[in-house]
Image (cartoon, rainbow over all chains, first blue to last red; front, side):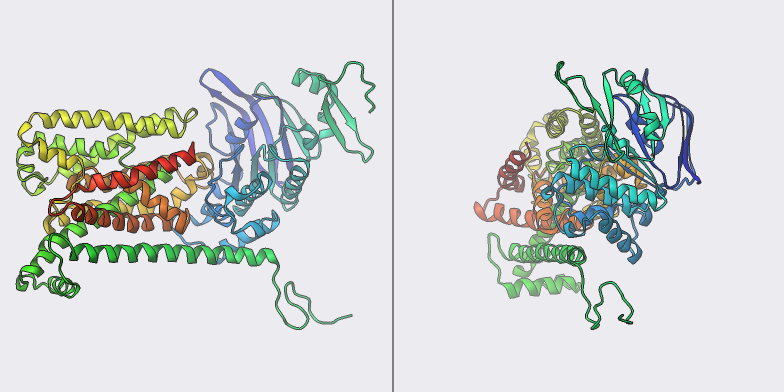
Length: 257
Length: 377
């Protein structure tokens, strides 16, 4: 597998605060990577640094291709322009290819249609964004990123505000992108969702604490330590596992696992 | 087994079917194009009608045929052959209505661009203090060049007596005010949003208006004329002034039009725009440059006129959609139509006297502002 992007001893400081400290990470084509960690761990900072939005204070970020169009970024709770139609929004993604002055070509239109088909948003094409539900808006926002036909897709908490079904649907779309050869990096708060990705990167306090297959990385002991709260990892019958915090469980409960 | 080749969307009978999503996807575009075309056509039609009605009416009502005849003669370069009526149309009214159209277009276009830049439908050259910046720049240039008294001799601003550099000074003043408002609103972006933006603009505008008044007070004889100018006034319009204003307004608007797609991208936020290859700082500079030039042209030749830059884009966004490639030209057309009609109203309501056009637009636009604000907060 070819490397799409990597960081070497990446350190990012905001003033005197160190958000990321000497992070080494290689990202491969076709990989579905989740980034997890407590609040303030530096997850969003890592994504922004990979997107080239914030400079490295020391160390470096290298990408296989320097072209902006090889990368798509979906910000955390991106504020969508409510009066744009879904199709108009997705078309904005093509600016990465067409620039600001060229009209959209047939090729661009096809990429837009394809991105909307993959996110099941074709039927929303003529709707104003403000009239869409949270899940629909998030799918349209994802379609905009897919329309860029990126090799590196960076998503910052795309599943926040979504219910279980919409979380699963969105991540299923994203997984298919990875299977198509794109490297997908997604910041997730929900560790049970992260458990279903190919590789899990755990950040805490700006330091990369662990990375690897989710079943290896997401164990109760280290997670409890990292999140500073009691955490249990539960296997389901179908072999998937769920990560739960037991902090507010009733003390006398006979919790079954 | 059926040996026919299987193609998606083509039934065995050769009948082509589409799925619902594809139909809606295709329709989204055709509907948008139709909407854009209709809104542009409607605004252009309103402008044409406004120009004509405004050229026909005034203290004297002149017939349509005489008006058209005078315009025809004037356009073919035979203005010297015009009779009195024709001359009223060609020499007095036409420059005035065209100046109203040019100023209105500049206000509408720069209003739309600023709303895109600030991502806020309440941005407007007047409300954000940019018009005050332009008037300060113009006044300062007039004062320093010693032309202030001469410029305000006849009850209205007459730039022919003054330096040709007044609009440039006005543009610099406008750019300064816009930079200040931008800095204030960005510093407060995390808290407030709309409130911070409007308060910042109000404060910048008040300070610059105070400075302008201070400069003008030194010449108390002409206060009335100066006052009329700050209220927005088109009575100084002439072919010569129209020729002076056009390069500034035109080049400012061309710059803004060129940035339309960039403004679209900016609606996704600065970070996302940057990953699309759109540089926000450069875009911001471009909008400041274009909007300052266009606003400066307005203020130098017509004084401070509020709310056109707010109302025109607001209406056109609803009619023609939010994409700036349509919104910017549509706002120019609508702003032009709006100001032509407001000036017409100002001349007709109290004739033979006239209301400064700025009063008319503020009376009409103020309530619209409050209505948008109510929806927003």
